[in-house]
Length: 360
Ligand SMILES: *Cc1c(COP(=O)(O)O)cnc(C)c1O
Image (cartoon, rainbow, N blue to C red):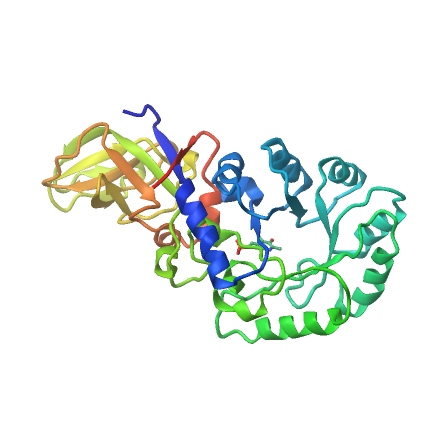
């Protein structure tokens, strides 16, 4: 029996399956697997080990790129936020990281460098208004990067969709058209599509694909789950029962006595709580699995524990495994129950939870 109170099983076969799915949806385009924020909480080293055939990676920060190198990844690594200063530029050179230049200051810094041969993407703001240069200035900035001694030629061209997860939203088409208009005739690689675009707008996904959430088997859409799209959940978050008792009808369970039994029932206490990244605002009735049996939260989530209504006839006992989300219980369902998105839940699994590689 495993000794951990809580743990996250990371299914390496599921990760590989989901990567394969990307190439089925948009064939013959290169893929940079997005592994920012510790691979969406799945643990960077495990994910890099599983996706050993991927063309390239994308991270948010230079330090994350350096960490990917430390895990032995030899392919291209794009830093989506680019360099935040001269130290980052030096690290990018040292670790061979491909920088996104998304504002004029970053272009200036790259043009001031006299050596380096850095691979660079120029990011254009086609309508999300978060990162990227104004399309009207993009040709001029592209020309400046094209003349920089420090930039390997030609620079790539990138943009990002704001609403690709809404299959009827006209913004995606207009973003694509704007990007195409302002980059027409310029040499260089292209990169456009995140998971939602790969799944809902494959016709717009030219060049390097940037799948994140779908690699982890999670749907980018609000109203569906990964398995409904043929994806397999990569993370199964588990704990175990450390106490079981009978509670009589009318007796309350947990902090502030917010939940009371309406009938005599068995209550199991599992060793997981918001200190592990299980959302603290999940309401009573949130589903969990005890073994393979459905059950539900009773009372508030504590820092290190939850209490579960096992039902009057349950024979569950101390040591039995509890699934919080993953295989058999979509993280999308749990995210909806607490008004958050599944990205937040997987990223929020805390450091004290060991990630354990499994292969389904
Ligand atoms: C995070 C990110 C992605 C991946 O998005 P998913 O929705 O997880 O597929 C792609 N591109 C950029 C610029 C990002 O920041």
